[in-house]
Amino acid sequence: MRLRLVVSGVVFCGVVAGAFARAGQAASSDEAQGKVWWARVEYLADPSMKGRLTGSEEYLKAAAYVVDQFKSFGLTPAGVNGSFYQPVNFDVQRVIASKSSMNLVVDGKVTPLALGEDAILGSRSAQLKEVNAPLVFIGYGLHLPESKYDDFDSAEVPWKELKGKIVVYINGGPADLPGPLKSYARTAPFAKALLDAGAVGSISIPTPKSMDFGWQRVASSASQPGMRLAVAPDADAVAAKHPALADVHSTMFSATFNPAQAEKLFAGTGHTFAELLALADAQKPLPRFSLNKSLMATVVGETSHVVSPNIVGELKGSDPVLSKEYVLVSAHLDHLGVGAEIHGKTIYSGAMDDASGVATVLETAKKFSEAKARPKRSMLFVIFTAEEKGLLGSRYFAGHPTVPESAIVADLNLDMFMPLFPLKKLHVQGLDESTLGDDAKKVGAQHGIVIAADPEPDRNSFIRTDQYSFVQAGVPALAMKFGWTMGSPEYKAWREWLAVRYHSTDDDLTQPVDLAAAAQFNDYFADLARAVADDPARPHYLGASFFKRFEAGQ
Image (cartoon, rainbow, N blue to C red; front, side, top):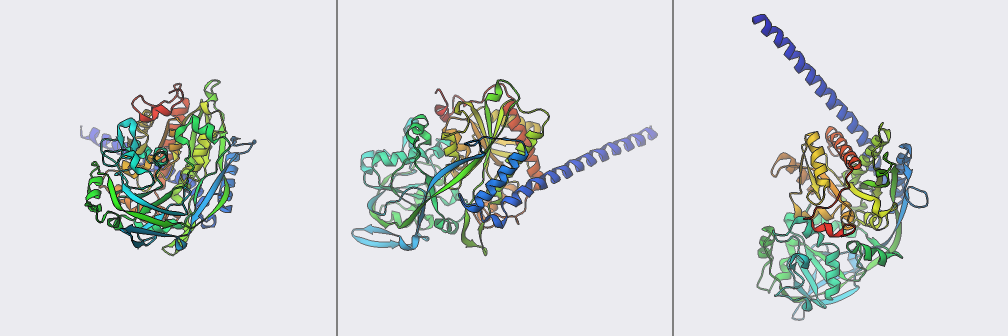
C-alpha cells in the first residue's frame, strides 16, 4: 500500500506538471498572438499617424494599410467601383470660441458666460449665428410617446410652449425606461422633436456620474471640428425606408453646460441644480418649468467639406444558399487627430479607440481566410470612418450598403474593447435585443467567459458605437467590452482609463495592455462570428425589443 501511494503520487505529480506545462504553453501562445495583434495597433497608433482625423492624409495612409492587409488575405473588394473604398462626403464645422459668446439675460440684465468654463458650443449640427430666446427646462429631454413618456409635452410645459424656446435638459432618464430606449431617444427622435415643436435650440447638462472624464477634457474638445453627412441625392428615399437613420438638416443652437456651473441656469426658479441632480442620479422623475431667463448668443464658425472612405472587404461563404447573406465584422479607423495639449502631447493617437478594434477585425479576417473550412455565410469586413464625429461612416453605410441591403443579417462591432486585465467577463451592448445575445452567451460559455448586459446604461454606450447604425436600420447588432464587477480592481482600472486616457493624448502606445487577454478575446470574437455565420437560422430581433419595429417587414 505504501509503495502504491508513492507511485500514485509520482503519477499525479507528473499529470499536474504536464497540466501546468500545457497551461504555460497556452499562456505563451496567447502572449505571442497578442503581440501580433499589438503590432497592428502600433502601426495604426504610431505618432506619425497624427491621430487619424477623418479625411486627413494620415487617415488615408491608415486606410491604405487596411486595404493592403485585406488584399494579402485574399479578400474581394466590396466597396464601390470595384475597389475596397466607399467614399463618404462630410460638411465640416469648426466653432471659433474666441469670437463667439453666450450670455444669460434676466429682467434685461446681461450676464456673460465664459465659453470653456461655463459651457461649450456644439459643432456637429449647423449652428444659428445669432440667438436670443427664453430658456425652459424639460427634465431628461426624452421624447418617447410610444412608451407613454414625453418630456417635450408635459402638464407643466406643454408642447405648444416650446416654440421659439431653447430647451434645457439633464442626461439620464427614469428607472422604468430601459437603458437602450433612453439612449435611442437621444438620437433621431430628439432632433425631430426639437424641429417639430418649433424650438430654436437645446442645452444639455451631463451628470458628473455619467461623465467619462472631467469637464476640462470636455472643454478642450470644443476646438475639434464637427462633421455631419453632406446631403445625399437619395436622402429622402433613405429616410423614408429607415426613418431612424434620417438626418434632421436644420439650423439650431446647441451647447453643453458645465454641471459645476449649472446653478446659474436655475437661479431664481425655486429649484436648484443640486436638487435636480440628486433626482437624476436616483433615476427619479424630474419636474419641468420655465427658467425665467433667456440666452443670448453669437456663434462664429468656419465651414468646409471633406471626403473620407469606409473600407470594405468580402470573404465569400461556402454554403450555396447562405453565402448570399452577409455577417458584418466592423470597427472604426478614425480618431481625433491633433488637438489641445494634454500632458505635453498634442497627438490623440487612439490606440484603444479604435486601432485595437481595427487590429482585431484584421486578425479575424486573416483567421477566416486561412481556415480550412470557410464560414457558410459570406463575411463582410468593414472599417468605418467618422465614428468620432457621430457614427457618420457607419450611418452612411447602413443607408447605402455596398451589398444587397436585405442580405445583411448581423453586425458584430468592435470599439475599444479594452483588454486592460484578464478576460473573465464581457459587457455586451444589445445583448437583450436580438437572438445574437444567445449566440454571445453560448460562445462565452465555451470560452469560460461571463456575458452580461451594460451595467451603466446612462453612459449611453448603446448609441455611441457603430453597431447602433445597424440597429437603426433593423439589422441585429452587438458591440462589446471587457467586463467587471462594480467596485472591483477591474472596475477601478476601467474608470481610471476613462478618466486619464479616453479621448486624451494618453491613449497611446505607452499604456499597459494585457496581450494574452487580447488574444483570448480575439479567439472568442472569431468564434462568435463563425457561430453567427454558420447558424442556419437568420438572426432576428426579439418580440419584446423596442427595436424590432425597425426590422424589415415589421
